[in-house]
Image (cartoon, helix red, strand yellow):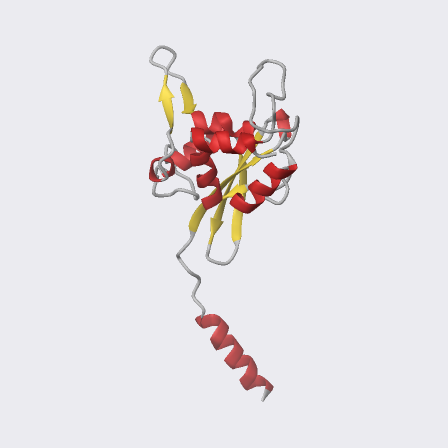
Length: 182
């Protein structure tokens, strides 16, 4: 009887075929992290059940993966997810130096949802937060309700929430609304 149960369990478990329906998930955390970076970017693979193959990358690598400029396991078909999600981000090559530069206003603005002023000395830009180093309680509640961010210090804006955030930080009406939340 035990042998039949084991054989049946083996047949059932062996017949489960892993899904080829794996898709990339991209995200950002707005918090001062390693090397004093204000944003941390992450890539995952999602198989319909769990996020796996986590890779934390720098800003330029992230853009190259997401835009399809570089092939990767996160974007093997080299799809430009920025264009697909109507985000104005691109890599441009300086004609004189031949160096690649990032042209991405939404990514340049992400720090503003957390800080009231730029947190380092070399810029004096004003952010959108109503508290100095983190959003006000009302803004934190809004971030939770809109993007499912429980803690601004530790949570990533992931997948559809990441793309929604990238669209929102480019929208002057959204910015004015966010700044008005106490």
